[in-house]
Amino acid sequence: MKQIETDVNEKLIPVPANITSVLRGVWSMGALTAATNLKIFDALADGPEKAEVIAERCGITLAAARVIARALAGLDLLTLEPLSERFSLSEEAAIYLVSDQPLYLGHYIEVHSKIQSHWQSLEQVARSGEPVTRVNEEGDAQSFFPALAASLFAMNYSHASQVADRFQALIPEDRPFRVLDLACGSGVWSIPLAKESAGVKVDALDFEAVLDVTRRFTENNGVAHSYQYLAGDWRQVELGEERYDLVLLGHILHSEGIEDSGALLDAVTRALKKGGHVVIAEFVIGDCGTKPAAVAMFAINMFILTSRGCIFSQKELSNMLKDRGYENIEPLAENTSYEAMVLIGKKKS
Ligand SMILES: C[S@@+](CC[C@H](N)C(=O)[O-])C[C@H]1O[C@@H](n2cnc3c(N)ncnc32)[C@H](O)[C@@H]1O
Image (cartoon, rainbow, N blue to C red; front, side):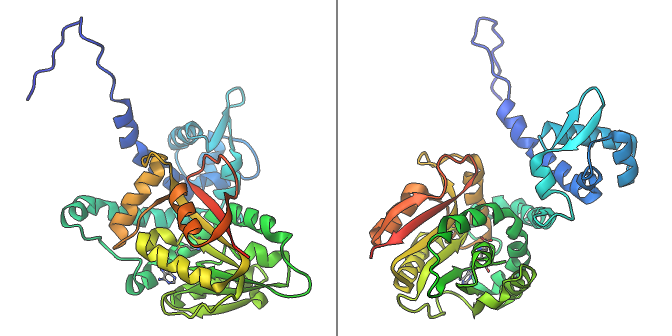
């Protein structure tokens, strides 16, 4: 091994801050998972409390309540008021981490832990070039997606309701507004739109096992009457020609890969009416190809779980739409720091 020069005149050796921060990422996930399972966020749902109350409500020791709650405050999921020594929920935790809230992410946290177990195989996948599973193919998809798709409802609801706001004004009064929610999962991208107006008529397409989840969510949200279901792989389902006013592609292109995403967009473009819109929700990498780091990590996730999945930059997605004759291509919101974005394009009239 090379000897480290310890000459004091040499330039200062940096501390390994990035490396330790990466290694301790799993601790953050462990703390969040345990706190959710122990119902620490539920214990604070009615207002700020001291560690003693958290300990009693969650059936854990006082020492555990103190260290876990402080760490969660360090992660900005709780806040600690120093004088009263009381912990309270951050706005995000109140919406997403309290178990009786409609957008509770507990199920997503469970599924995420399962996905995480596949990461143990990254070295093997890197050597063999073979993923551990191929969730982009029907056999594996039918067992993998029902739980994931259900858990993604809460993840995507905020953006999906912004999409509904954006299209509300385009819903005509004198005829149905036809929507194709392709790879619909829970139906999260179309449900807020269907809630806007009974004139919205949705064709929800996914594998049969996932459509059971879609039916559950459309019923629970009181919009089942606006839905028809198309079961199967999109490659085999007839999407028709100039049938839809809006096609929603929520987090599907990344598992299809570049070539098949092109074929999917060709089929979608045929199915859209002239002047209709496509909405693409995706994890989008910056033009540098490396940041946000979470998206670059997601590319590894695709490498482990699919046979051809990938990530896209906004420029790549925009070019795919431009090449197919779309105009007015723009993100739903500018400058969001979040890893997922929504891109909208209009098929030329
Ligand atoms: C990541 S989930 C996204 C679900 C939903 N659109 C959302 O954003 O929450 C991907 C969905 O695509 C579906 N899917 C994957 N490959 C498909 C295919 N070839 N044909 C139809 N659906 C597919 C999966 O079953 C799953 O529901």
